[in-house]
Length: 155
Image 1 (cartoon, helix red, strand yellow):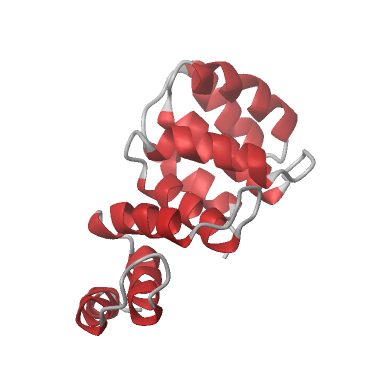
Image 2: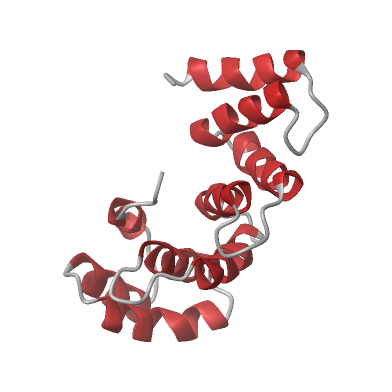
């Protein structure tokens, strides 16, 4: 369930400024202190990718004390900009009540946004929420819709 460092590497093919790339190179080498140093100012300026990556670092405790609360802060900033991975990870945080008060309704909101962008895990989890009436009105037809979309992607 935890986001792995591989997600950081997934975005490495995109083009960012030198500071972002320096942070990415450092993270790939396990130098999370440098990654945090490079990404924090960029994230504070509103860069969703840097915000997401900081969320991953704090979510997993890579080189820092694990802090779901800090991860939620960074994921929220990135998720609000439409970052699908941040939306999914934020949904997980609210679904499980890690670093925030557990809130199925908020989890469903973020799962929905990620699911609508095609995130297969969000689609499955949203199906589960509709099936069980967690954070949404129980609706087996809607649950089946999300389960089907996830299944069509191989889940």
